[in-house]
Amino acid sequence: MPGRLAGPLHKGRLRAPFVFLAALLACGLAGAACHPPGPLERARVSFHYDGDTLRLADGRRVRLLGIDTPEMNYHDGEPQPLAEQAKARVAQLLPRGGTVQLARDRQPHDRFGRALAHAFRADGTSVEETLLREGLAVVFILPPNVALADCLLAAEREARRAKRGLWLLPDYQVQPAGKVPADGRWRRVRGRVTSAQRRDDWVLLKLDRRVQLRVARRDWAAFAPADPGAWRGREVVARGKLKSRYGRPQMRLWHPAQIEVSK
Image (cartoon, rainbow, N blue to C red):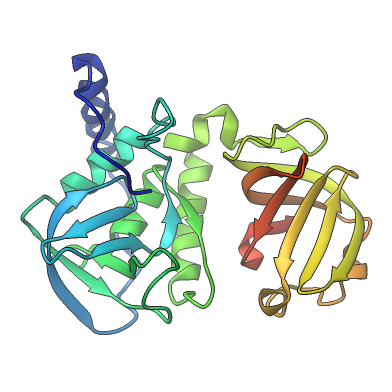
């Protein structure tokens, strides 16, 4: 997320991201599979806010589609684990003063006024796919921008199987709904659906009578089964940022990739 620049970093903290990146580059990661979903616009990079947000030379801010990287927390203390590494990797892939190729999806801007786009290097490499394969990002599909959902999910699955980056951290392991903290961080939560209902513009699923999953009705059409009642009794794993709302843990779901029936 964008924010003001942080102060000077301690030398040890500054060095750590590059040591981490060197290890990733030595892994010999698989080749690219994500291709531009439409015409490409060439632009020049002027600044990196974090691992998923850039500023262009013309002043536009660009939020990379399909991923979410750990927060730098410029206003709220320390960066989240691997946030600096994700930012450093994007700076390596798309250096300041260098060229980025941007491909639009369905939605041109978000509610913050940022341009939404998929980013590619001059050689056609997908920046989002690279971060996912290296375990420096998680998939975040925000409808209607779903053009690259399948290939991005495949890249994340590869990193998860190989336990790269974020997938080694405790916060990114599956946690029981009855105990996981609602601290605003990205979580994977397992629980049994104990209630399911439609309420106004929302479909609400509750896990283990504690964590509420919220899906807007306009997004629910992509979920299956379509009848909320059919979810009752199923054990599922949901993924996203778990926040406290009116003192209750809640997670917003936008896309079916955020919930799966537990095996």
